[in-house]
Length: 293
Image (cartoon, rainbow, N blue to C red; front, side):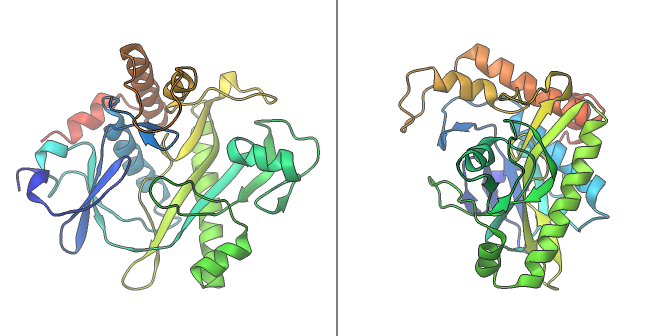
């Protein structure tokens, strides 16, 4: 196997392609970036490798909490996608996104302003934007079709969607445990883990397994702790530079998305790489070297 083009393509999303390896999958993270659910024509160099390397690190740091689908980042991985591709186990994926929030921000902030709750979970009055919650909360969401937005739901609705209360209770407890592990690790490195989302599936034995990506800048809000201050939005280790530029560019947020200026690309790449290096305690080049073809 010399090229990913030799493999049967199963799905292609905004960021990832999935290829069939028989009993396993090849999960390839591209350098594509989107805002407002539209992919821009300009990639962010090394973004896919950052997401992949961080996921592998987190799989190792959390495997005592729940098994994961990771098999290898090198063996059986075509050379042209090394560093941003993983061999993973096939799972029967659950039809919900598993979101954990430790701070009131994003759609949770909008929900709280309107209702005093997030996904039906009542919260204390008077919380400010970006304020830490009394304790992390589990707020599931539906998995949207391509081009649509995920919809926040309460726990009882998630039980209905999955069809198994005991399984959803296990998913909730594992999600909260994963968030706690991630938040502690990040805090020790000067980073706030505001919220994150997980995807779970069942293996052929019916055991719960975490899949997809874990605790990356694309699936999580990471904030520099030294800059954190409640009462406003926070700077984050993700595509914020691209979002801010897109919001002020005059683009109407309908396809096609405009090309991203070189300066914004460089600053965004630097934020992703900084997130890797701070969380993984190593230069980004070390991951590249370990997965070199």
